[in-house]
Amino acid sequence: MAVTDKEKGPKGGISTFIVEKDFPGFKVGKHLDKMGCRTSPTSELFFEDCEVPEKNLLGELGHGFIAVAKESLEWERSVMVAPHIGLMEANLEDCVAYAKERKQFGQPIANFQAIQHKLADIKIAMDTSRMMIYRAAWLKDQGRPAEMEAAIAKLFSSEVASKAASEAVQIFGGYGYTRENRVERVFRDSKLGEIGGGTSEIQRMIISRMLLRGAR
Ligand SMILES: Cc1cc2nc3c(=O)[nH]c(=O)nc-3n(C[C@H](O)[C@H](O)[C@H](O)COP(=O)(O)OP(=O)(O)OC[C@H]3O[C@@H](n4cnc5c(N)ncnc54)[C@H](O)[C@@H]3O)c2cc1C
Image (cartoon, rainbow, N blue to C red):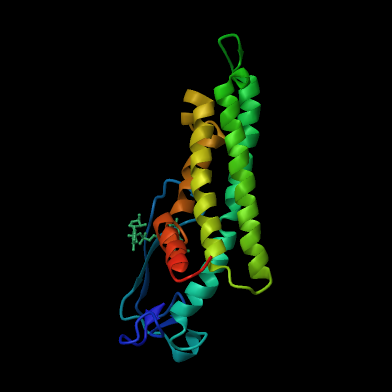
């Protein structure tokens, strides 16, 4: 994305380009060591006096921000959170099995109501997230606007997935804090959902802005 008309700013002054790796002025910087999602490499990218031919313009001139805000981000928010359902499913599977296996005070920890309630809360978080994500995806499939629904699905599912991941580590106790099991990894991976594709703060801003403009 690059500013092609400073005066217009985000309203028609930003355009999208395809930048090839060998274009002058484009450089890949250092690899960034992340806390989670480590199978997906992330690094710095530098665009310094980067020359891009006109034919590499993607879509119409000046439509970059509009295209991203209205199209890509809605899609991204609708689909990028679907893996959270998978994370919660994995958590639930691991936690149910571990709660039945781990014995304390002469009985499986699954017998303790405090543990049972955590399992129930993870299940509720997973099912409600699934419904919200399906609603946004259903609207997108029909070509209907889904800005509010995608923001709600993204915000809600990422926050409850993070909470569920934390509770899963709690169910595993000290073992959950080691790298010998999946709940530790899910705990680190799930945090990205609250940041990538627009932070939770930005999603709340989008939802409230739409409400104040008259959306219901
Ligand atoms: C692993 C990873 C992969 C990513 N992949 C991509 C990708 O493929 N494509 C891509 O485009 N981006 C990608 N991102 C970038 C991601 O979208 C941004 O990190 C994210 O949108 C937050 O922006 P920022 O990092 O600049 O945080 P900042 O904007 O600096 O935010 C810092 C804090 O301030 C808050 N804040 C900022 N502005 C406001 C405001 N107006 N009101 C209230 N609070 C505010 C934020 O919510 C946050 O809490 C990726 C990020 C990560 C970590």
